[in-house]
Image (tube, rainbow, N blue to C red):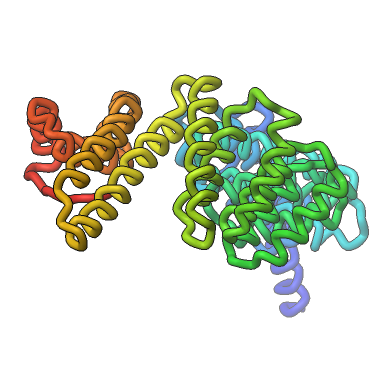
Length: 409
């Protein structure tokens, strides 16, 4: 009889414990409905700490719902309740699905996951707007993964995850995501240019050309793909092919300053490539000048075009200067050297307005500030403009602390 009584007492105690934990779940739900998120979280965590309720899928669903409300709350007191509420909610919903073996909660699980997917997407959009692209990519990826649980294939969100990763510099992650997007046949021309550009950055020119070929086949008139193709040829040194592609692009969009700039860079490189004849390099030099000027005409604040054109003139002056010095050593013809000096100075003075304009455009904390300022200092030194040299020297000392008489770009 004593054993029976003891078993009965233990049984009653166990029922009371279960009821107590059920009570924690009810209190968590009640506080959630009232907006008392801190209390709701505490009660549901109590329930999850007990074996009887932690094996109940409904408890995990409720936990996820509370965490989503915390994530979406604008009340500052909720900000530090949980470090990553949406990710914790994601894990809770995975557990709920795992425990719901009889599918009794399948409808509420799908509805909750639908909400969770939207929460993740919105969080990703906010992080993207804040320029936190790495976090944005992660949230977009979670949104996509959650959408898969209720039978949706949200390729647009998956693409956003790849795009954010690419902007964040996480190119390996971006590439893997883009491959998934491509397999899903997503209608987005930028996908192919991104796959090509990343392949090109990995020095896999064959893969880059293959991706561009697929993009051109599907979107034959898309300028972004044409531009990416030209960029691949430029970086691999195939300048004639790059020029051919850019000519197609400019014919289709003659008022695009970026295309004229790319065309100028193409010819700029060609003008310095000794594989071409002297006449071909001179032709490329003149074409580069016209293309840079056209880019500036179309976009008067085009810093890269201003600086590159100034640098190109200056470097041409350096080339002529070295050539004249070598000839002087051979023939000692000082009169001829003086004539060449005049031409060299004219070329350097051609560089001056473009370098000065680019300096006006740049902020002192810009990573290119030092390069532009050094370029101007050397220009003023070589053209004997002492007043301007002193001005730039003062700026240099103020910014960098001491003078460094460095030559070249």
